[in-house]
Length: 135
Length: 340
Image (tube, rainbow over all chains, first blue to last red; front, side, top):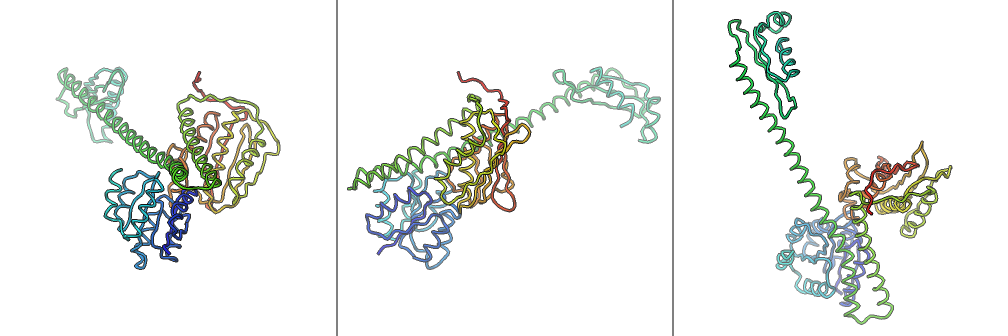
């Protein structure tokens, strides 16, 4: 079964993502911050990571940096969700290979489409550029 | 400085006119040997700008045969004029430089504010957009519909709270907020705020150490509740692992003093003061993502200021943070413009 790790500190957005992906019959696990997320990812080696950027203890960018340094985990695609507009963050997120950026607020249909695409192709880096340029 | 030169400069400064001293030997007998100068002649001119004395310019001669005449005095006045212009220009440049720096700082603060506020708006908007789209597009049970409607409602309230905080702070900072002072019981107020906070902090234990005298205080009730609520919310937010939050109230001379102490992540010493400034939040790996508008503490500071009181923070090395709020027992309200 396809496993997805979701890292998000806002309970309502955790719920939204869980419910949205629940319809796709994925095994969705939720982490409350980057530290929990890193632990879960190391333990499960999921097929996809969906993560917020601003999170307590370890933020999404730092968490993904740490994940990318582990050879067994480096190929897992990542979908960043962000409510931020700070350009350096968007640029940094876009530079991480195998990632896409989803801006909050997002439509559940959009989330579902992006997730399916990332899981099926295993890569989204080609579109990351255009994804953040719009902002 | 040879005494004769100092004396001539002082005189020029006092008279605000150029001064010529033609026989300085007598005046300068004492400094002659000490400074190895033999001043025979001094000319001094004041540096005046729009009636203000900026300093004096003096020249002297050690050559007994060289006498300063009116032409030398005119030349000195001319040079004094140029020196004044240079000084004034330099000062104006410094002031301008400061103004530019201040504008840059404000610009950065504004940019930070826009980025924080948009982040804070987008988070509840994500819930509102997401849950409402699901209600529209999915086949949901009645119970699920209700639940999502409740989620949307919570997010709408959160947005409203954010907007109110921004407007409140703006009103207070621009002096358009008037206080409605009344007799209030400090202890009753602390108890009330603690009671409201407890259901939102199931992992924390909120302990009260109340003032034994149960004295009254004259202040704006709603504002003090707001300040105390912000301090307690922060104590809860910044001690994510739970623990004890202690609220202490007491009277000290003519001040009501409230202390809120948590055992959370604490505050770095270098930002203990700036956290009360608008749109700055304690930035550290532990705190940067804790939800908040960065408006809570500036609001506390404004409320304290409007009452003639004070607020400050300490972060003991033993961990956690301590916030103080003092309000004069009879609030000496600071000047505020009425908002009609």
